[in-house]
Amino acid sequence: MALRVLSVSQNLRQLSKGAELLKRYKATASLKKTLVNIPATQVTRLDNGLRVASEDSGAATATVGLWIDAGSRSETEKNNGVAHFLEHMAFKGTAKRSQTDLELEVENLGAHLNAYTSREQTVFYAKCLSKDVPKAVEILADIIQNSKLGESEIERERSVILREMQEVESNLQEVVFDHLHATAYQGTPLGQTILGPTKNIKCIGKQDLCDYISTHYKASRIVLAGAGGVKHDDLVKLAQDNLRGLENTFDGKPPAITPCRFTGSEVRVRDDSLPLAHVAVAVEGCGWTDQDNIPLMVANTLIGAWDRSQGGGVNNASNLARASAEDNLCHSFQSFNTCYKDTGLWGIYFVCDPLQCEDMLFNVQTEWMRLCTMVTEAEVERAKNLLKTNMLLQLDGTTPICEDIGRQMLCYNRRIPLHELEQRIDAVSVSNVCDVAMKYIYDRCPAVAAVGPVENLPEYNRIRSSMYWLRV
Image (tube, rainbow, N blue to C red; front, side, top):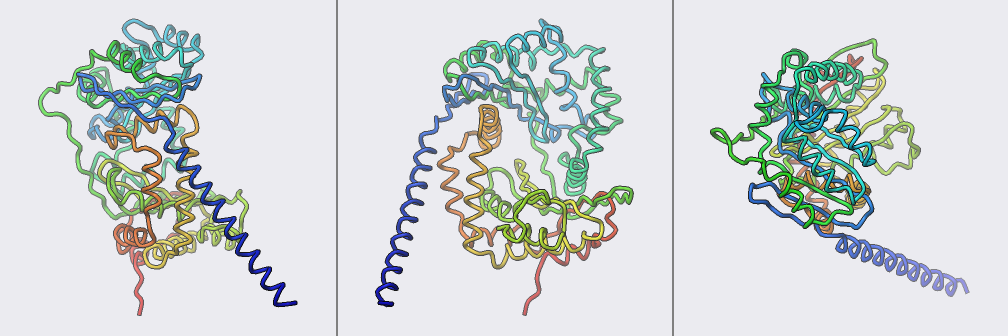
């Protein structure tokens, strides 16, 4: 009787295992089918070199924007901050619209107009009803081609930017990442801040802004991207009508990308009046188009992120999150993989109590060494699934999709289809993760930036000596 019960239970286990595999197969098949059926991203290049890229989902709303291949990396030490200053000036009136007219026109459409500047890109975009896309494109085209750049508006924005710089100084995460770039890419354009130094902001004038526009706002460096309820042929016609005046000729040589060398080094701003230590440690990663980028993204996801307000404790899948919760190592941490055209920063940022700096860093570097030597199949599978989930969650809405299109067009000169990206993530194996970890992390000189009560953070040579394991 006992043998019969045992046999039945084994059969039931086999059946349940088969049902689970079938369920997983159906879910995977469904995801693949969904990804393949996502509307294609259509791309057209105009005669002047400007690219138009869009994804038509038939939604009632749409996001359209201009992605410009120029940011703080395109600046010199003398004019650092001009790209961000120009972003502020964009909404202060054009040759045919005053600032008030511009604001009223956007308000009456019920649209949202916004802009931002990064180290390699400047972006102007609008979110509106799909029927208002022609008006939104016309406004964006007017802004980047005909900004008035009045002296009184420049003086007013100068004060606004100086106030913004004070606000950024109070955001310690921003401060740490600026310090990290400054030490990792010291002496190169990537080491400069996006906002620029105070002395530059106080003296940037109209001529500096005009020179930056005439040098970098060229048709071949601009992408008009659209997502949501936007028809590609209509967007192409709008681009021809409103942006055909953009030139694509340069005075002399076209501006080239300055190679930015990585320097293993550190910067510490000790301030014992702050309650917590903010620390970032990074090695040099790779650029957007490098074949190692996807495995590095998987490795980054494997380290993960954690915050004390989250639950989980001993049940966290991430080893570092589990250790942080059990031993009270930190308040939060997040792994990052910041990419640029030809380089990148791969590392971790954490916030901890002053006495926990050494223990937290020890656990971080232990995890990094484990990535290089003995990461498991289960961990890599979990990281790949999480990466794919995050990838899809980040594309929830017309604005994130439009941003994805614009950024990828500038980085890859095409938009990678989601099913292709999924296949590339699925193709990452344990050996791939170990190989890129050995290549980029093992025995490499890190860049370290720390702000706050950081007396207990080990000195640089000790941090460097923990970037490899000596084993018998």
